Image (cartoon, rainbow, N blue to C red; front, side, top):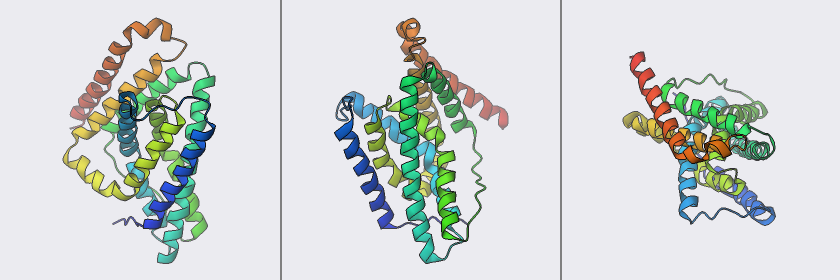
Length: 252
């Protein structure tokens, strides 16, 4: 059985690191920061939290697996520095993706379609196995945590950036809220999903809505599809949830 090691100072590190990044973003951002207290801001934040937790819950398990063979006094250091590196890497990935969205034609369209697939896979894939090799030295364990989280976090970054409409401050605030929940509440959340599987369908629907919203905002097609944007979003949700239900039934 895999143990997930919990340390209060790692929680402090999360808040400290991301709070500094948010402060820098607020100081130097040339764009108007989305007001989180508005209805639009609160809805975006809710979407980010749901997407973040649903897509990144397994990452906490990976952290525990990578550090489980270390001596107790080194497990703490591995989780501390591995998680810090993972947070920084994820924010860098988010920043690069935002820049790419703003500069590469049709990327919003492609990213939106990819989110539909991610939403579908979230519901359909119920295989929770992780093949992460436990390391017996500190440096290897840290690198494993950072690399594994980076690879597993690609879908998470795409989803969160889409929900935040490319606003990096909102992405960082969302991480400030969800990273500790993911690290310390993953086991509980898995049990909740097992008890209430409808949560996965809701998450898949949210990803489909965000993906459709991202796609219709692409300059390549926005002028053509704008009048039908709401119908496209609703259709995307029906398509993803419906296809997921069908495949799950066929699997039984």
